Every structure is written in structure tokens, then in C-alpha cells.
Length: 258
Image 1 (tube, rainbow, N blue to C red):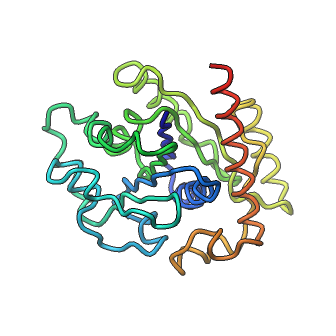
Image 2 (cartoon, rainbow, N blue to C red):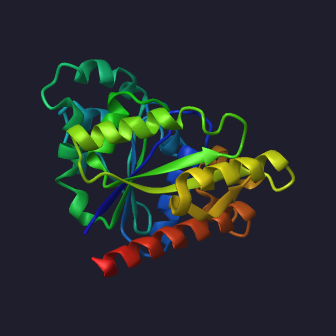
């Protein structure tokens, strides 16, 4: 059965897109069929893996001009397909606002293709607008990246409130997949303090894996590659390998329980 995971945090610069690219590519590297969906108008998940201005895109799918299967780029790498974004998505929220069932447009669009994949990873915009609402309505769970920096917890209350509203009105089964600590600098006391606060607040929802600050992770998007294809022995690659393994293990245990 497919699992749809939205990666969301309305704060920008928290490692959301980096996580979407690298988590999806490393799940795929485990020979698990994966789809990366870029629903961010900035289309950084798409450009970060060398996909630019591809047509059709998620925009055409959302407004009903194209079927999702025709917009998917197959086999970006073995076991990884991509449903890309482009700049046209900027106006989508305005166009969608008067459409019937506007909160479920992504869910309805993905219905025709989701069964082909074991995991669908959605990269959300850094906002809590209609596009993110669509992602949360379509998803089974939310992965929340939190940077280990000052103001890290600022705005998380608003995100959690949005998640609860989505559960009440659109998607009662929506759960928190996990909370991921990013941009961790072992030299800084602040990083350790923020990590302690996040663990105190979210408990066992926080992944054991921590994503450390790493130059190679920052460089990889400029070469249009996930970290596993750019520098597989870097600290960043090892961190995301560990995250993918932890996520898969958690879902395996959950499946066994159910």
C-alpha cells in the first residue's frame, strides 16, 4: 500500500527541499518505488535534480488541464519518478480558490497514479496556503524539518494548528510522521539546546537521525544531483542514508503491528 508523506514547515530555509530530494532518492536507492512531488512554486526540488521548466507540470495537473501520469518524469533514477513544478504554479492558489473541492485537488489528481508507488514524498511551499493544505489533505503523514538555530520553534504552533484543522475537516487520519533536526552544528551549544527543546516537545516523534551542517549537501543542488549521486561518502549522504533507514524501519514496524 502506498504511503504519502508531506514535508512541511512554513519557515523557509529549514532543509525542507533538501530533505525531500535526498530522502526520496535514498528510499529509491533501497529499490523501493518512490515518487517525488514538487508542489512548491519555487520548484527547488525540481531544479535541484536538474529538472527545469518541464511541461506538463504539477500546475497543469492541479488546474485540470493534464492527467498526473502524463506529467510524471519516469525513472529519474532507478525506482524514482518525479512530478515536477515550474514557475506557472505561482498563480495556482488564486486560480484554485473558487474551484469546487479546492482542498482535495492534489489528492484527486494523485489517485490515478499513487498505487504504482510505495512512497510518495511531497515537497510543500514555505507557507500554510492552499497548496500546502492540498498536500496535507492528500498525505497520510507529515514530516517536519526543524533547524537547530534560534527561532527554530517559532511558528511550529501554527503548523501544528493547521495540521489539527486539516484532521478535523479534510483528513482525519493525518499523522505526524516524524520531526527531523536539521543544520545541526556539534560545535554550537545552541544546536544542542534547540535539539533538547524539540525532543522535550515532540518526544519519540523526533528522529534519532540528525542532519548535520555539511558543505557537500549545500553544493549538491547546484550540480542538479541528490547527495547520494554527488558525494556518496560525505557526512550529508551518511545522515540521509540513516534517515531513510530509520523511516523505513519505523514504517515496517507499523505495518507489522497493523
